[in-house]
Image 1 (spheres, helix red, strand yellow):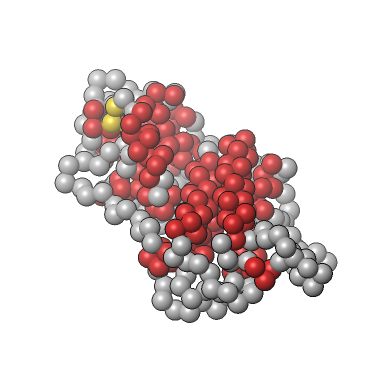
Image 2 (cartoon, rainbow, N blue to C red):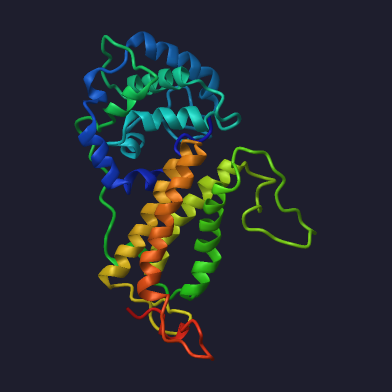
Length: 318
């Protein structure tokens, strides 16, 4: 069980602020209400010891994988429904054979995690059904929540160095390939075993690259994280558009469009963790909308001429 706290999971959890607060508001219980039993936690520990202990440690303090108890772990899942944690365990763990745990086993493991984090036991067991969506994880007293993400362009970008790439290069090198891989889920089941691009062949596909190394679902995970993590690069101070005009990194609408793209990436990652093709396909609509909102204002410019039919000269200007 190598990486229950996968790369990008912190970002995915922290910046799902809107949906997290919604989940908290809709929940009828929190994990502080005694939602599992000691017997269930003991079953979960037995399964944990055979499936998870080698990577996450006997006391859930981490090793090859991250810790599964303590303040940092709890901050990742704060205000999210318990169903999300159980779903990640069931769908993506253990890393060496993901998807082999039953829903009941994953629920028992979650009970063990709650007990280890000192949440109280109760009289009724966690049920491996939709009731998990009605139970929110919450930080115990004394554990401060994670800081809210910054909202200004310069703060989101987090860099004062002059960027080497222009807007088109960042788009074509990172965002377009990652988006296209996610859109491809509509036509290709990530769960199917397929042979990826091979060195020495005559063509190269961003969609197929890596498929001989990583599973299809892992590629969807990575593409989602690429969108979420790289979107703030669009706010790097000093970046120029392909036509040489400065990218309007401090404009409120540009910051909003960038946040929409980052949120779409986070939503895609969350959908990918369900290992549900339909869920990821649905999220691609959110990705398309995020791109469209920005392109309508800053990219798709009318009034071109024979020398510049797409009017590139006017891009990056509201």
